[in-house]
Length: 300
Image 1 (tube, one colour):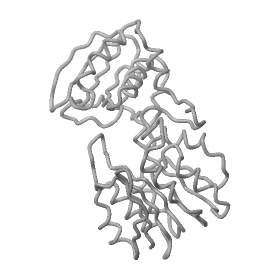
Image 2 (tube, one colour):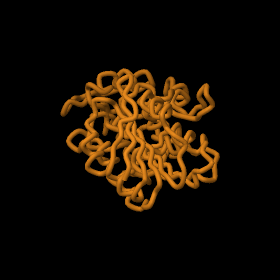
Image 3 (cartoon, one colour):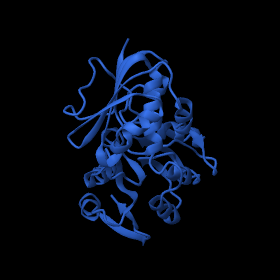
Image 4 (cartoon, helix red, strand yellow):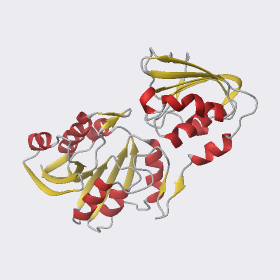
């Protein structure tokens, strides 16, 4: 039987099982853990995500996929869910051995025959339709609401035209607004999170939209001559703030746009994107600054 790994745990925290298949939705091209047959794995290692609902769902999926007697090794940083990890697994009906290493809590479990609360944890983290009609799933960025930065951008975004892209599209908030303009000819939606791409595919029924599950920083090299890019770039990697992510998105947008093309970007006020914008674009115009967020229009 095969082995699997979810995410990229530090090797000095968890040694990946030999021949493990990757099942994280944040690794383009990986398999979907939910699609792995029940009781088909001998072993799985999991870098547990920080969100409580998402964490329970991932651990429940891992246990579902293990055969009885199979081995689960799960780890999380102490300040990002590690302190509750043993309790979560125990609530699912597991006997848990716990150790600590490199600021992580590490739990090992032999999958029992019977599991308590498994179906509830699976259902809690499944894709769902929100009150506004959009599909989403716990674990996606701002999964259950429109985030304030995107809301500010939407309040100031003009009707766009031509060929464009939505970098880090999420479930499709920005893309839906962009596509209300009949002058938009096509729109590429790109996100690193498979769950976001799947949700956006359900949320956007428009022949002008094309979706890609990939890293913007790699995908942008194949996009040229765009008329516009819209984005609310990420600034966390593995739960740790990484300001270079947004700066890389800005450079990718500049490389994808035609001369005279425009970037519309929203970001938290504290993020230092102005220098990157001015270095990559001919003109940069502050559009809005409110509620801790800012919006810029930059012209190539």
